[in-house]
Length: 93
Image 1 (cartoon, rainbow, N blue to C red):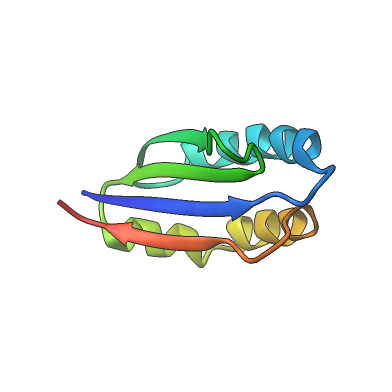
Image 2 (cartoon, helix red, strand yellow; image 1 turned 90 degrees about the horizontal axis):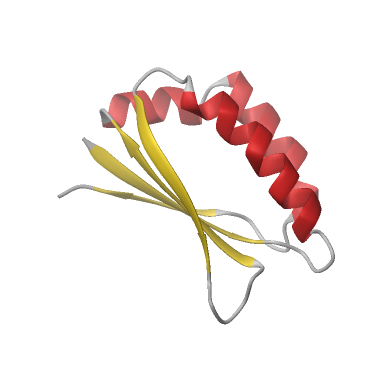
């Protein structure tokens, strides 16, 4: 089991658009092979600073999803909503 932390900074004025996008994107992620669970958070100091905490069955499952055409399409759609590139950390306990 691995955990993936995705950190994003939503551009000013794009928060409601990002939240709508995220709902649709998570629906597609929930059915990805190896996806176990996920939660969305935001910083208490900056509502535009967002985090996704996801659990995947294996690093291989995450890598498959990360490189999938479907995720790449989602990321390309989301990029204009962000003020900087997303940061991804892969963690294991």
